[in-house]
Amino acid sequence: MENLAADCRNELIGHCIQSDVFKNTPNAPIGFNLKAELLCHLRIMNTFQWSNRRDSYIKHLRNYRLCWIPNSSNIRSIMSANLIAWLISGLLLLRILYERIRDRRLPPGPARLPLIGNLHQAPTNLPWVTYQRWIKQYGPIISAQFGSNTVIFIGDATIARSLLDKRGDIYSDRPRMVMAGENLTKGIHLLLRRYNERYKLHQRLDAPVLSLRASKTYYPLQDLESKQLLFDFLPTNDFKKVYERYAASLVYSLVYGTRLHTGNEWMLKHAHQVQDNFAYAARVGTWIVDAIPILNYLPSTLAPWKKTAEKFYQIEKELHLNNMQTALATKGWNWTKEFSKSKEAALMSHIELAYNMRMFTLATLAYPEFVIKAQKELDSVVGPDRLPTLDDEPNLPYISAIVKESLRWRSIAPGGVPHATLTADEYMGYQIPKGATIVWLYWAMALDENTFDRPLEFLPERWLDRSENEKKCQFVSFFGYGRRLCTGRHIAKNSLFLLMARILWGFDVRHAVDEDGKPKEVDDLNMTSGFVSSPVPFEAVFEPRSVHHKEVIESNWRNAEKDIDMIMNSIRDKQISVGLKVQA
Image (cartoon, rainbow, N blue to C red):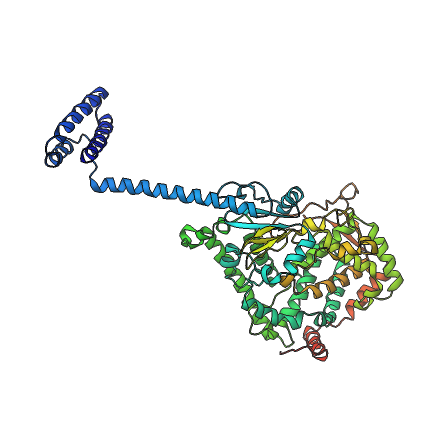
């Protein structure tokens, strides 16, 4: 055994000598001869007392700088490096085997690569279109692997209700979003907050002011804001700005007790910047730290996303603090005063409300035939001398159908807002792991040909056809699922009904024309990409239906009660009168 070890040692020294001689000796054959001679000496020395002569011989070689002779510590380092390499290889092999076993139990989906899964297939532009194609190919419930994150896509409303509604105790969490949820918003954004006791506390705080009963008390404010919207359309066709002012002013009045009169206020511009920052940070596939969360432990100098998030956070923090100070200084009631112990009061995004109205405008241009039907109903029920109100809703079924179709036709979040599992689950024989991201793909559900005839078209009549009711009852909720259902949905629906009814009552919406007088076409499928989506910019012309309609609009705005403190206090008193608990 000792002789074998010595021979191995000798061969190693010989190879080192040969290597060094080739590097430092200009004549290569000398290296070969020197190696042979040295090995001969080494073998002879091995028959005598190797231990005594070895060190002196090696020292002699080092003095002549012929080679580097490894000592015992060097050999141990080489062996340790080899061992680490084998361990890493073994761990990688185990990981690949684990992935293969795991993938067999998951719902079907596109083929994965070892370790990265489907990360190389992650779409960055209009991702919901790619996911819809996967669902058509692999089935109504599929899976994909993006790095360490398992994602389950649901493209069928019945499955969504079975899991997200009926098993809400499992499917009510949010996936970990390192960039948007932890770095940008520091874990306080209600939309991204994990399903925990603090989230439940906010739900309890929100319930009184966002309930169905409470939503009806906000009509005086919705009435005022919609009257200004009609009046604003008389001199301008900038519907994007008009809608955004309406929606933002409605929310700011409720939350902070402050109206936005022009749409040019600094706080609105600031809010748009915050919304854009959030949408950018929440985009799937943008940040490597979302796919590999362990990278978030790196210092800021090595993690540029942290600097970006901190910059965005400071902008949002400044906005919220200024808004809260404004709200607390008002004379009237508002949600901030009601939630004075809560840091989050803005629960209904004005961006979402404005988006739905822009899609409604796009539909009036792309499908003008429904406008004619709606105006006939309004003329019959409301007449030309007054504006429609929420009390008219039971008698305006076609307008209600337009609201539903607007919500179905194009969603602000076509990819849905993801949920996550709190525990592992099983469905249809498939395993759904704990912590998996659950995406209810609204785009696939809304355009499901098995549910809706001609799904790409804007057809309010589909909501009036009783033969279709059974299928529609199984259809996706417009405002989400389960315990993550949008809390502001009642206010949003009332606002959409009032706006759509009043715009159709007072205006004809037409195509803008070019320099040659030809109508400018619109593409109703041309959408922006991101966490939220909207139609690309387009133009429209709003013309009063008659001089009389214009006069009614002007008169209503001129005589409207505009004292926001008085309006908000009347809302508070109304809520108290219907039995709601109001603290402010």
